[in-house]
Amino acid sequence: MTRPCPPRLSTALACACLLTSLHGCGGGGGTNAPTESPAISPSGSSAYSIASSTSSSSVTSSRSSSSSSALATSTPSSSSSSEAAAASCAAYQWPGYTPDLDYDIKTDTTNSTVDPANFKVYLGCSASLVAGYKTSGRFAFIWGKNRNASITDTDIDRVLANLNEDADYIHDTMGWPVDKLQQNGYYSNVYLYGSGLCTDSASNTEKGGWQSSYGGYPMVLLSYYPVITASERGGITHEYIHAIMASMGNKAAWFNEGSNTWLQMNMEAARTGTHGVGFLDGAPFLAPHMPVENYSGWLQDGSFGGPNAEGVNLISNGQQVSTWREYLGGNQYNSAFSHFIALYLFKGSNAWIWKKGTQNHILRSLAGGLGETQIRHLIMEYRARQAMVDFGAWSEGFKVPINQHWGRTISSERIDGGIQQQTTHRLSFYAATTQSGDTLTPATDTLPGWSGANQIPLSVSGNKVRVSFQPLGANMRFQLAYCAADGSTVYSQPVANGEACLNLAKPPKNGTVVGVVSNVDYLYEGETTRKAKFDYRLQLLEGISGTAGLYDKYYQ
Image 1 (cartoon, rainbow, N blue to C red):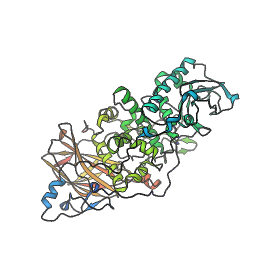
Image 2 (cartoon, helix red, strand yellow):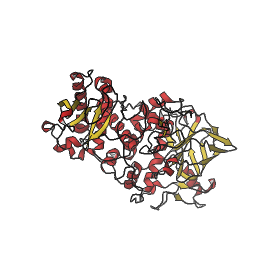
Image 3 (cartoon, one colour):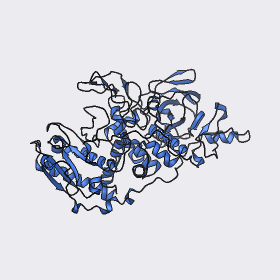
């Protein structure tokens, strides 16, 4: 029967709906990854050493020659201390990653034996339930005896034509493999939801659409509404992409959505030359304390939805509780991490995850290829570039949904007949702190979760900034970063504790530098991980008058 969606109910974001702007709701469910750790070999590259010191006076910029630790700890000798201090304040150049995870999806041979001219119809349901079907190109549209009367044959022809145009581009030009039905010589199926087929028992007036499966074959299940609504084309294609990905293996639910929207955006960028993103793509930027692998965002109880929506579903006295917040509840649909790894890890990183990644959880899979040192560095780089919206050709596109929701006060998302909570939060890149003397203490509610971050805006003057980082949680990193007046981005040498220093060789826009605090845990270990928060303190040493405003846009 149909594959269940990750547990949650929402008018705007439930699996049984289609959204425009490249954000359809897909199945994407999955089982938890194994609890055992993968075989991870530490990176041999010394470029990933992180400065660590016990006091601000023992800063080091030397690189560790050890390949067995993610941290480099050394104290410069008296003869080289001035050179080390100068180097540690210089702008940081991000190193590359090894080994090569740049999988060329076009080398996949799945498509080579597929000939749509020879496709057969796989009804799936008993023929007695099928009232009719239409085939075209790669697809079959199948309906039962209770087909909604508002659907015309012209509507069905339009859906099939649009799907074929997009699928041909995805398979023939981009090189992504076909779904399991096509691999086995059948048309890809689109079933009409609510029409009396074996796929469901719904009314023919129900709305929605998603990727599901029947008889072990991923397929698209559409209600009448997206069929008769031309503007739902993007959502329908989104569900077909889910069928492709479901045929490639089981990945965490959040990545089923995020990498899906990434693929669709790249298709549109290649065809039109534009780099627009979806309206939910602002979510991870506006709440960076959320983990990378996160479904349904920062929950009302202060914890985070897990990679497969763990912790999200809650029923009280038979009523659904809105555990998720407005806007952030759709965080899984954001494409930011997929864009980041395609830009700064390897172009074919997303394809590598689908074809070569061995784990359900994505950071765990990447760690299996990169090793512990580099995966921690990758998380840190993602968080630093996120703070600057440093995403190459996609940067301006991301700023659109960020700006649309900047400063918005959110509460729980409304559920018809459900229970709402009223915890409110105002969206911003930046985490609140309190200052006592020269020490900043972060607000506890927005402390970083696992793989999450805080961004602290600092008002600066002079030609150098120095901050002492004091982690109170494990696996923490700190960097300084800013947007320069000339439009470039500048980053400091990362540290695990102790002093971070950055020369302001280029004037910062608005006289502001951002302190980026990252947690670099990459293994999800269940409820302990999902609920964890990571504390720290910042001591302001030089060039900083205090914190800047939380609702000014220093990334502009």
